Every structure is written in C-alpha cells, then in structure tokens.
Length: 99
Image (cartoon, rainbow, N blue to C red; front, side):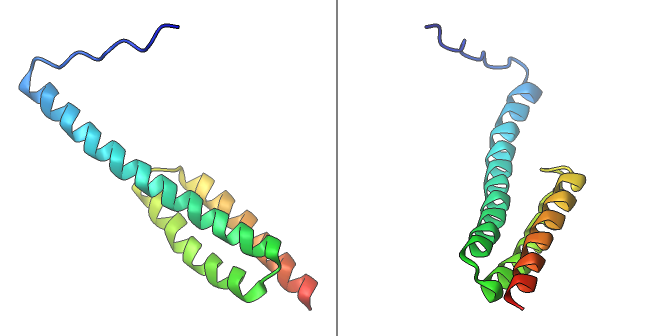
C-alpha cells in the first residue's frame, strides 16, 4: 500500500509564507465547519427528542452560525439557506404536532 508522497518545501519566500498561511486558514475553516455541523446536529437531535422549546431555542442559535459561515464563504450561501429551510420545516412540524 503506497502512502501519499511527502510535499516538498517551497523554495521562494512567498511560497513558504503561503504554506504557513494555508495551515492557519485550514485550521480555522475546519473549526468553523465543525461548529456549523454541530449546530445543525443539535437542532435535529432536539426535534427527534420532541422537545419543542429546546428545538426552537437551538434553531435560533443555529441560524446565526449558519449565516456567519455562509458569509465567510466556508459553505455556499445556498447550502446554508437550504439547511436553514429544512431545519425550520422540522421545527415547525414539531410545533404543529404538539398543538
């Protein structure tokens, strides 16, 4: 089983700087992507549990997280809008079922 070839270090100073920046940006983006997915997952868990108040509260928090990450360009704005729409529909269905 062949392993991935080791990346060579860039020779130019600008290339070395770009490589350093890429490491930092990748870490930041990974963290934010994780935050996004956790927010979505928490709302879905509350919906499955049937907890209307918690689901509504978590959805409000998730909306701001989704918007922030779409604005930063980590996920496409249409993906964020689609996820918000689907979560909203699930929370509303929960509210209707409780009534």
